[in-house]
Length: 434
Image (cartoon, rainbow, N blue to C red; front, top):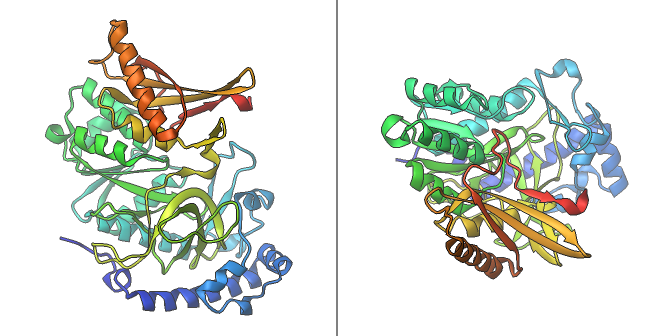
């Protein structure tokens, strides 16, 4: 049975939704022009005024916003409200430069919670469920976002945060966890530890739903997770700048629902900045329509996806983005060929003999790019028979070449030899940049 958190809005006819979006877009552009010196200057430099925005199509007149803008105006130079109007800050790690600071008014937190209440309801969660939140809490947005959303729909929350895996499994059993939110790589690690402790998710726990995200993962990885654990694995999306996790797939697992009354979505050609035809791959751009403290206008997310505006089988009329295919800046160019780690994962997950963990190592030898893929194989497959291993390496290399159109070196390694992480996984080492 399909449930809705707010059926009137979630099933609003497309023409009415567009009218609502247009009015909200005009309102937010006026708001940021009046309250943000940053945006007033940015719009003036682009030669655009709030009164120029009359329809949704006019959004293309507006300049893009970049993550570097948040760093350049650190800490609060892009905010539209004074600090005394805020109820919370979140801060990114700042591992690639200045951190980004996001502030929230009480209404911003409420809108964030509402977005996740709709999302969690769409995957069948509600009163009686126990959501184990294994994303990080604190300055990171992952934990608290899903925490508030779950409480809003009447679910109980088990705020385990990341790490302490044996304890997580113990609490999962003792407290009847029915759903877990974490990165796909951490769930795989959780499953490894469960097997060592002879814990079977289907027999020994009530777990039936995984809300997995914060890093790209493939449809093939989803199938592996679901087949090996018996849960239903749903994709979740959001960014720290927008408000952390915000949206999920619904029960049909056919794209992530983006609430159009809160956000305006575009998919563009990264090089030209022009919209791509619906159904074609491009870079995700989002405009916030309801945020008060830190509205973002045409914010270039950096993720690549496909836009789908057709109504979903679940009855929701809001647009969907299909599975995130990777990040624009994650793309590797090897001997002139574009390679995304997600492509490699998709190939590997279709080969039963290999495990879920791999590492891509790119180097430059004698002025020529080289790509080495280290892949764990299952304990059953790992063999001292050299001929068997060579045969499997050739099989994997051939499968990768057929998809990537690139010859790569394949190195099979023993299960457990590649690093594990409780946060976002690292699957690429590019030595050309060192």
